[in-house]
Amino acid sequence: MTRFMALALLLAGCTESTTLDPGGDATLDAAAARDAGPDLDAGETDAGEMDAGGRDAGLYPPGATGSSCERDEDCREGECLHEGVFPDGVCTTRCRSDTVCPVGSYCLPDIELCAPSCEPGRTDSCRPGYACVPEALGSGRPACFPGCYEDADCRSGRMCETIGTDRFPGACFTPEAPIGGACEVFADCRPGSVCMDEEGAGWPGGACVRGFGCEEGVALEASPFRCIARCDVDSDCRPSYRCATLPEGRACVPGCTSDAECTAPGHECVVSLGVCWPPASPSEVARRCGFGTDVCEASYCAQTADADAPSLCAVAGCRLSGDGPSRACPVGSACVAPRSELRREQPALHDPEIGVCMPTCAGPADCPQGTRCEAGACQF
Image: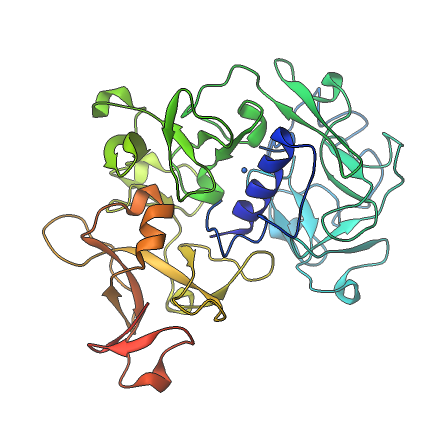
């Protein structure tokens, strides 16, 4: 799971309730999965939304924390984040405290990123596409975060959905976007929905997933994003998706079959899962994960049986049995069965013949906390 998922659930919860609880569902290692949020034109330049007075509106020097970017090299320090969340990208630094954040910014504890400070109530206090959040994401202080104040702040065809609290000004959405419809950014989806974008979530071409209410789709009981498109046969789904039988019913799940169907830079099709992910390295296997500074780039962040143990990156897509596509496990790892909870949370992992890669082992000392050494591999 990536930081995108943490932001996703956090922001999705804001549109249907009138409170924002960063200490609750935003801790996604316990829930697992990547939400309805702000005007999220990651990587795009929109004349109406992003270019008023320049992408940074003269607020930040090029490469400074909070400035726009397209790649890491555009930032003086830290990195450039898009992940379907940050309009025109944003230069930021991963953090656990203010000490690593540049002057004029501070750490947002709930997402472990540095954000520029701002003056609440001033619409020009942040760059276009961002709003000054008075009590930003666990910090108790105002910071610039993707958002809007009125419809005019959003691209044509979108509306600004106000939240009704001082914790979050508002977010841009597309009112009539269908469940399962293609999306690049959260604003492509309707209020109460999220964009499972390809770069962040791995869903080919992105897909709008309903966070609240499920009159039109299939509700996934174990997933934070609990409503996906309903189907009877594959032809009911978009290209690069297929109709799968889940415990809750038949629904459209990721189903790419070739790298050509993946458009995010550096991503390739994991055919056994149908998702678009970057290649997994040996260091990704069973790496400690959470959200913020410890994110999985090409895998799911999975809990172990020990609730007190750290969650681990589960590189999924290898085959436990049967014939068919299989993702090769990185060197030093082997294919094992994931916990049933992870299968229920991730629609792409519903096939019982598909497993996850975990380190090989000779004894308990070779395995991460919360796992056991069995049959030569660390098991969940």
